[in-house]
Image 1 (cartoon, chains in turn red, yellow):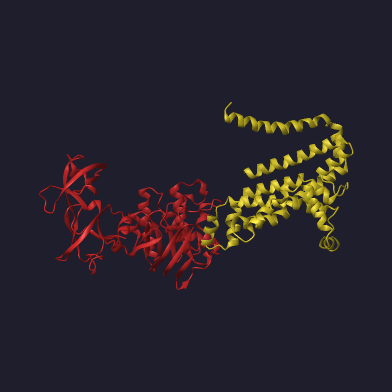
Image 2 (spheres, one colour):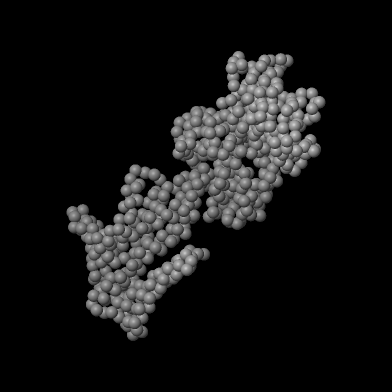
Length: 360
Length: 254
């Protein structure tokens, strides 16, 4: 459907380097990256608002990298929404249809159900200036999806909405995308949004593609430290490969002064040069729990440095046995009753949750 | 005195300077002289000439300034800086010099050919229009550019990604969103053309009932020591201009 090959984009001193992506027809591809990683540049280039320095964008079989934006038939919802202030909500949404010569009746026929679903039917004759933030978002979303384009580009479409509305719109958009077999490219830094809407997932940092593939694979098995960083993994421990046993690879972590096991089927394992490869073990804060000292597999010698309570859970900062390392742990309040900074605790790590990451 | 108060006082002072100048007119203003002024065919002709020429100049300048201002606002092209600098030429060259340059052009072989085969400009109303056009064009393009600069280029981009060609994007999105600025540009252009004197008198001369605009009328009356007539014409110029400015502000605020 959309194939991007070795795309290079220059914007001032920043550049997107040799980016290649493959979007499959009828699926939602999500790009997750930190701010300033080049996500918006990429979308603008696909939409035709920027010329790439090098590389090709093949869309529906032809290279469109030099085609004018109006001839691309790609819908784009920019992060700043870019609603036209000289038009009513209705005129904004139907602008693309009007420009393409679609009659008022047909436009209305498409607009009505969409407006009802997005809960903006009562706003159609209002001016853009008289809308709230959420209403503006929904209007811009309606404008992007009303024309049933072959490809829809969404740049952080829900970033400034409250959580309740966000979740409602996620489900609505996902349903529409599946029903109408839209191909979508969505850019976000919200992992929940990426998990819910995405079929495929790409991670980008500093203008470079870090990882790409089916969502479950990229999410559950990050290969590099920077991929894990983007996916919100909190703890990274240097480790040395020790050997294999029973389908596991064993690593020694000097910080915890213990051995940790990673499934041998983890994508970064199974290579010949494992002993020479520089690994870091990635562990999510939610995969570590506080346990009693007689628990099998308990890791001893951690000291609580700080506790940050938030609702029913708390984030703990632990100092590792090797003093210059600390760990973040997410625990239920019930697990830490009576504990205070300075206390010694034992921790356990959920089996199968340790990631063997390559330092890049 | 605080900075805020000082600022307000100076703002009021600027008003007072002009108000005092206008008030001093009343010394020489009498009902009889005004009556005589309004009943004179020469005055009415001067008003008509001024309003007609200034209004036409706004439209002609607009035809050039809209596309030129848009191009300067949106596109980067070879010679953009030179064009941009040249727009200020009428501002720093005195209007009389500008008029003299037009006259000099019409004494070149190309200018003589234009005068003989296309249109006689020197000492005609066409000369007034040409002189005013040349005098206001730079400011007019600058103001149009500023009006288009106010409209984010994101709007053009968005319209194009929704399927509009570059002209359609200009017509449906950029132009409507720049309308306030463009309207203000038209009014200022009109006001500048109305008051234009130096270039106009150099090119079109001072022929009563033919090339006499209101500013030229004031000059001619002063030159012939007709103080009351000059004061009446000044009052008239002020009234016509303030009326138009007031109405245009009224319309644009709606």
